[in-house]
Image (cartoon, rainbow, N blue to C red):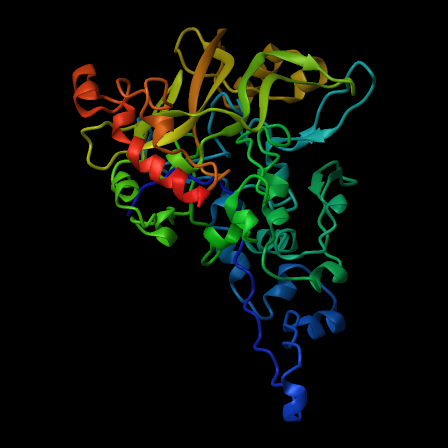
Length: 476
């Protein structure tokens, strides 16, 4: 299979429920038939049941979809982790993901930053926050939980209802002091069940990493992605089977449902109807030409928190709008190098499995243990309230049972795969790569100066006639 970077878990929690066949239309006179409008697609076939019995969460859904909730508990969206076989230096038998990973984009995880009420700030305010606020449960049944209670805690409608009231999706405290995440289980929302929409996915994935468009910095809309322009939604590519979401390969994103996808699954390996362009697909990933820009955070400093107008603090962050950042290019074979100061793609020109892919370079500053050299996690409760980053490190170390640590600041570089903001009109052309000032650094990619000169890899002679013909054709 052709390897490609991950398209960051944009998919919804499940494939849409199967639609019923349209009822047969009554026979009509031949004259009227020619002007008749197509029959309207029927609503979810069990709406009558919901109208009569109300909606009680997965219990209601499983009248027709038995076993679905139990199966969902084994997916990445519920567990926030999975076994990872393509990252060097980690135990492939252990599960990794948002639940337990430590890296400098988030510098925390579900364990140390579980949804909780933070300390009161200087203005006397507090709030409930945490890394797992997007987990599709009620928090009483939390990340990775199992059993009958967990099954009934699944929020089916947050992905499957087009009328989900997101204002109900907020944390609160029970009389016993436990944190519970609200859900919209209204009959109105249940009667609007269907295929997950873009909003169903982007409500969580667009806001990952601390705010809107922070992590990957892409907007999936008609102005920024050719697929959205054609009316496609996330699950048209990330089509789930048994709630398992297919993804690609990304140095930053590890957890997966064991199902992969690539551009070539739809477009094939010769999509251009152009012999020269199609010859590139053997070593150039589709994303390299068709995703020439990216966005989102390019750097964060977790050792220095910035005070907001609300009186709360957040990590100091440098971010860019979608399409504002130029990528770097590197060989990638789907394997990842993970070190305390670097998370990067593995690959080379001589590796037959490698292709050139585009990446966003992100750098994060956090605390490392002086004695072990390992990156330390951070509990965000304390620094969010008062900006005290070291208090957050101490709290996380206690939660993880690390004992005494000796924090020192340091930087980590992370390669983020670019997999959205796909363009056809603005795709890279020959002159964008094969010039001395082109986007590809041929020497860094393993080409010698002699070979570059001999093959004319940075010369207009390589492409001038071809592009001229294309330009003249446009003017006809």
